[in-house]
Image 1 (cartoon, helix red, strand yellow):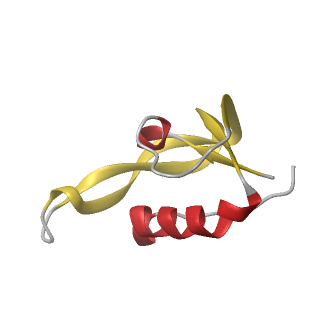
Image 2 (cartoon, helix red, strand yellow):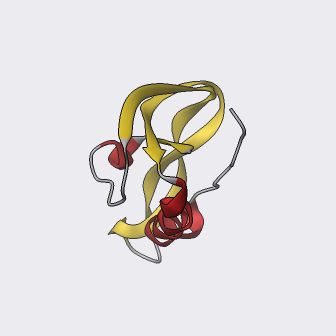
Length: 93
């Protein structure tokens, strides 16, 4: 079994198989406009601000229970969706 934490648009726009969802809090990080992107708005010359995570505080989100058989598919989907603009961390809990 694998649990994945998601925040922002992943709370309502996830396209992967889950068997359970619960509210969750990621302690030690908070949301901040610390990234730039042209994916949703902005231009290559003037990229738009995008929310990411920075150390300190807390971030509210959802935790998704993902079947072991779907783990690699979900990770691949998230990597494609988020692109190089996010850092994925795996932790044992």
